[in-house]
Image (cartoon, rainbow, N blue to C red; front, side, top):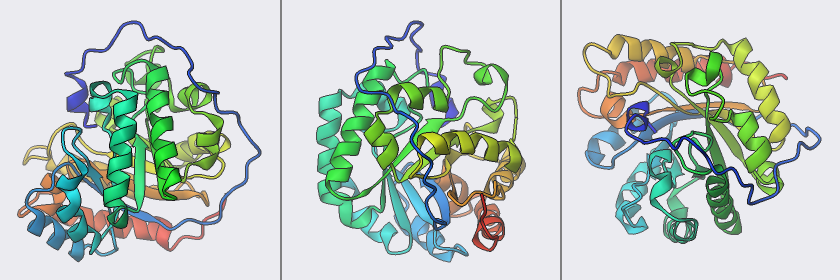
Length: 317
């Protein structure tokens, strides 16, 4: 979810932290082998499809396009667009954005996931079962846990790949200003991700917006230290970033800063075998894929930087 959307969400001052499922337990670290690099971009709309598909096809490395699925739309709405996108790109489907977490019950969400997976599975490679799940605007953590668990069960029943995205709030002091009431990714994982989910996830991602975290841009060394902690909790998952960007569409005034953030993110290399990059720039359609998009060139350069950092570098760790 773009940070601008979070600002309009009324955050509950007291969270009902009742654990509905067994908490994740750290298990013996069994590092997966080197994972393919993900060259990610996010689109929050499927309009201007010809432009978007054409731009995806011209990127220097095959992208993985993360498609935001509007909570008000049925799966059928996305069938034509995904078929075209999947022809030139991998696809990660975002089943529920954190900004819409409160808008749907656990039962209704499970039904939605079942419908989406049933209809869209041929054109979706990865299903994002939860987005920024530790954010303090998402509602009671126990309810968020129940939803991501239900989604995990539906997706794995279809033998499809799963991803879980956390809100990275701990690269600056005081949880980037949200305070201790908002759990960090590690804290949420320890308390609210059931063991079967933690051990079975294919991907675990971080969502991070530097301008919303005192402009902190963690180094590859900083990132490696934190991902090592997450790897203990998710020993079988590939790790990376599931969302980066600016709070708003890039404009003439913000394009330089946006390009700098994009370059910083996509060039990261923590030197871990299970790191896959990703990044999935939010507002990708408007910022980089549509006609005259201000970051079109920057995205191609970012993909090249990512390939230099991860696609050609020997991964150790």
